Image (cartoon, rainbow, N blue to C red; front, side, top):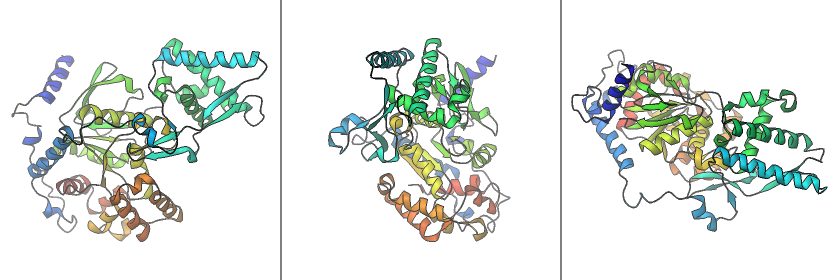
Length: 445
């Protein structure tokens, strides 16, 4: 019987039946009697939901049916490598057998070096902050092709070379047994050697670079962090998951993206939210039923699983992605990690970035535009201001004039605000006024 219910729900998402009560065309305007004009500025500017939905459909259609000039094959690093000032590298997805073969080949070469009396060392691609390059044509950060030696016979690197060898040995075991473990599991296999998980995590990224494969290919995953809710059905290791029935907390995003498949949705867009509190507000208000969407959050800093899941959503469902983050430099940094990648994992940016994420809010200009009270605004610290100025020097920010204007305004006013500042007008102001008005005005960058 449960299987029949799942099949019926799946059919609903693929049905064009005009009697479907939850279809976008049959959703009526939600009334907000508890929000007065005094406590909820701009409430009277809201048009009927049907008008906003028409605008969202146009946005979704423009993504699903791009013009011929914008529908060409995505540019790859190989396409632009000839015009770059520096050579760059990136990793690829490898099968377990391929990873095992790469490790065995590496160990064989190390053995030959030892037997010839030369000792051994690892040639490790440098992930230093100076060894990254933003490529505008790709709109993401990539790793330059610079490496450093990690010899076992040197006092300064003997311990790290030992940790690298141990990690390679553990990964080889995973390949043979064809199982997944968490990064925490990996750390606890040899606590005395690793000393701290941050050290084993860092070497794990080094091993990915050495073998030329994605971190997911190593079968080592992080613990569940991100969550998703809304108009989405997908299979998780064969079990069908309906994200409209996951309650306020949402469905935990599987740490192993290979378990995810059969994505189906009638959503018009994906709403990427920085904070768990805002996510819970939108989930409880069933915002995704009023404006059909999929809501996703990593509860702060983006983890690998959430980044992979968001990219899969974007590519398989071909939906626009709108981002809701705090109005501070760190909110924009989080947005940039999803869109352009992080320097720490720039070697895998091709698999971890989601192209064309639009900045919906909360933007510095919104503080005055939506009359956020002074008591809900926070003064920026010296570190905040420095981070904002540093972001203005980043090429991925300079490429977007709108981002530059907003950041300059933030640094000039020295004010920041969290998404929760909107609660000063009412706890449901975010879902009932702010976001609907933003969508109505197509106010995103």
